[in-house]
Structure formats: structure tokens, C-alpha cells
Amino acid sequence: MICLDNPRDSAERAVSALLKVPASADDLGRVFANAGHSLYLVGGSVRDALLGRPGPTGTADAAGGPRTSGVAGADLDFATDARPEQILDITRGWADGVWETGIAFGTVGLIRAGVRFEVTTYRTEAYDRTSRNPVVAYGDTLEGDLVRRDFTVNAMAVSVPGHEFVDLFGGMGDLARKVLRTPGSPEASFDDDPLRILRAARFEAQLGLVPVPELVAAMRSRTPRLKIVAVERIRDELRKLMVAADPVAGLARLVDVGVADVVLPELPALRMEIDEHHQHKDVYAHTLTVLRQAIALEDPPPDGGPDEVLRWAALLHDIGKPRTRRHAPGGGVSFHHHEVVGRDMTRRRLAALRFPKDVADAITLLVFLHLRFHGYGRGEWTDAAVRRYIHDAGPQLSRLHKLVRSDCTTRNRRKAETLAATYDTLEERIARLSEQEEIAAIRPELSGDDIMALLGLTPGRLVGQARAHMLDFRFEAGLVGREGAEAELFRWARANNIPIPGEIPGEHLDSGLPADSAVRSRT
Image 1: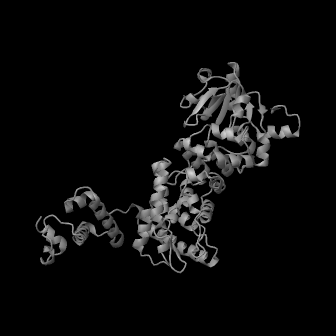
Image 2: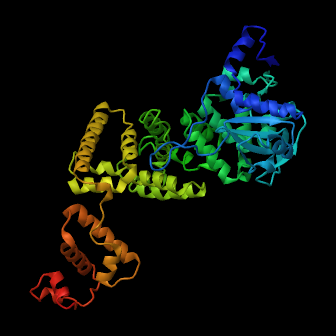
Image 3: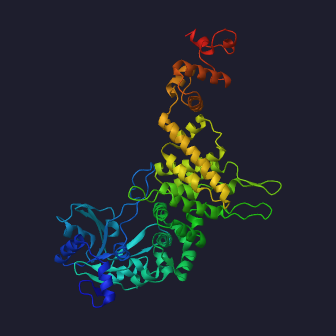
């Protein structure tokens, strides 16, 4: 135990210099001490202070705006010998606000002067092997609380306001060596809470802490236990991993130990066997490279930072390839329409993980559009095609630019430079056209209600097809006015054998009148 206020040697002085306890923590500690209870700053708060890290990294919102935390968390975490009801009594009048959503697990949330605190009663917990939820039992000692924590780097504590640093399991040394261990048996730890298997991969991605061999072995052997964990908890860990400093390291670990087969099976499925007579690039290795390159293109802080939507799109953009691979005569390999299959697979996977709809929709759209640029050739697209590209991407256009550029992993330098230059010209055309008109807001000149009234339709598939055609017409012809738009709608209807109210089929061909006039003459 080290007294941070009275270090005895250079090593203790170094720890004391790193562990600067916030005044608000000491203030809360005095409140508990006056009530006859102990309070310790614990877990990630202590770990991150030793690492000199700021608060948690947030996830990107789907629209590409400011980053917000994907999973709400406290600014400071504490452990105490006081029971939850006592915590509520002790902090009454001190806290500006209290939330009790975690009280069943011994946790009380507090807020004071804009700082969030989570205070948890010392506890021991274990999972019923058939249950998704922990069975909580309160403990009486700090040591008993720390030994049940997930990893040694999270099992350190500092008393407040006394400032005694407690490191019973060598967490500070593990941080220095960049290794990840559990305070006790890793098998027992993962049996208590299988989600810790995913956390191990997340800490490798987030902090560069490499699991020791016995931890890796336990991750592999206890992977089937993940099936009892609530999908929302798995989703939250994956989202945290994806916005970490090095998500590739964490993802590769999940694949290596077999965890990805359970929580994200589309990723290991990319490791397709390659027939010696039908060669193609390693799609799994390509995917991880695309993810790295996408991260390198993210906007820097303070306005930018980890872009969760872009990273997920990079990870999932080729998941349709295993299902669409075809071996052609002569050794060729094709993946026709893998972006369509990949879009549908992405939608299903993110729905299974219960992603927020706006985030899932943004990722799915990027997966679907990532290949469209390759139809651009050397700039043969018409302005209408460029407009459609802008319109379809909508608010995801800037992310689509980054994803398309990241998707070039060829080792042929000349080919890579040609692709980059071609995309440069496309971006220049997009910028030029965007200055002339608000392309993302383009709509057909006829609404769905107009179409139904003119064609006598009720809501359904035909209305959607007609509206899609009128949008294409708007891209091609620009603004033509109400009369011109109606004429085009009637032309499309006749070409698709859709009856037009008041018109005898074929009559417009013999009337000598323009097609739309033949209709209006009887209305």
C-alpha cells in the first residue's frame, strides 16, 4: 500500500505524481467518512489516471455530427462498504441528482456540479450457468471486491480522502509490461461473467494490453459461455472495441480464439479457402487493411475522432463475397452483386445485435454503395449519374468518399494512383454540381399523392415504382414543370401497361394529340 501524500521513495513519488485524485472525489470521500464508511476510487478511473488517459472515447452519430458516448458511463467509479440504501441516505443533500437504475446490482449513480459518480457496494457476483444475469452478493472487504474484478489493471484502488493506493494483484506492473491478466483464475473469471472474454479483446484494442497465454487459452475454452450473455451487452462491447485506438488488434483476437464465430460470424467467414486454380485476394486480410486505411482518413480531433459508422462499414463492406463467389472457366473468380448481398447481411446482423436504427441504416447504406464508383470508369458518368450518386449517399457522402478510397488495397502503385486520381475527378464534379444545386434535396416533381391521383392507384408497390422512375427522370431532365412531369408519368404508365383513368388503351396513338392531352381532353 502506498500513501500518495507521503511517498517514501522515487517509485512511490512517480505513482503519486500520476494519481492526482480529483477534489470532487475527496469531497465525496469525506461525506462517507463522516458517516463511518470507507470509499475508494476504483477500476478504470485509477487505471486511466496511471496511463494519463482522458475520459472514454465516444461513438459517432449516424449523421456524421458530434461524437457522443455509445454507452453511458460515470466520470468516476467508487467502491464502498455501505449498502445501497445507506449510499442514498449518505449522499442525500450532497448530490444534485441521483439515479437508481443499477441499484439492484448495488450501484447508485450521482451527479454533482456536472460530474457523474457511480458508487457500488463491495460485492461478489457469479453467473448462473443458465442465466444471462449476475447473482449479486454484497461483500464486506475491499480485497474481496477487487479479486472479483475482471483484470488486474482494473483491480487497483485509491482511498478517499486518505489517498492510499491499493494494488493487491500487480495491476500497475501489468500496465507497465502491457499485459492483461485476471486477479484469479481466468477460467473462473470468465465463468463469473463471460462478457469479460470480449472485454479482453477490447482492452487489447483500446490500451494495447496483450492477454497472457493462459488468458488466451481461457478465452478460447470459455467462448461457448457467451451464448448466455444478453445481446445488448455484447453489442455494447463490440461498439466500444470498434472506436478503440486499434480495433484491428481486438478483432483479430476475436477471430483467433473463436469468439467472432459466436458474436460476428460474418468476419471469420471472410477467411475463404483459395483454390490454387482460382486465385483471388485474401478477403479477410483485405478487410482489415481497409479498416486501417479508413481509420487513417478520419477527421482529427477536436471536431473529428473515431468514426464508428465508417469503421463498421469498412469492416462489413465485403461480407457478401463468400456467398457470391463463383469460379469461372480459366481460373477467374467473381463476386457479382456482393454489395447487394452484403447490404442484406449487414442489415440482419446489426438488427440481431440490436443496433440503433439510424446507425444501422447508415452502415448498411455505405456497404451497398461502396462498389458503385467502380462503374465510373474514366469519367464516363453523365451529370445525371453523378447527381444520383450524391442523392443516394445523402448525409453519408463524406463517409462514402473515405470508404471508397480505403477500399483500394492493391500493391500495384500505378493502379492505385490511377484509382485515386479518378476519384479525385469524381469529387471535383460532385463539388461543382453541388455548388449549382442542392442535389441531396432533389425530389420528383410529382409527389406520391399526385401519382396516385393521376393514375388512380392506392398505396402500394406501383406507386413506389412510379415515384422511383420520376426521380430518375428528374435527374436526367432537370425541372420540366408540372405538365411535362405528368406527360412523363403517363408515358411510363403506358409503357408498363398501367391503365390511365379516362383513357381507352391505345387511343392516344390515333388521337393526333400529345399523350397527356388525350387524357386531359376528357377530364
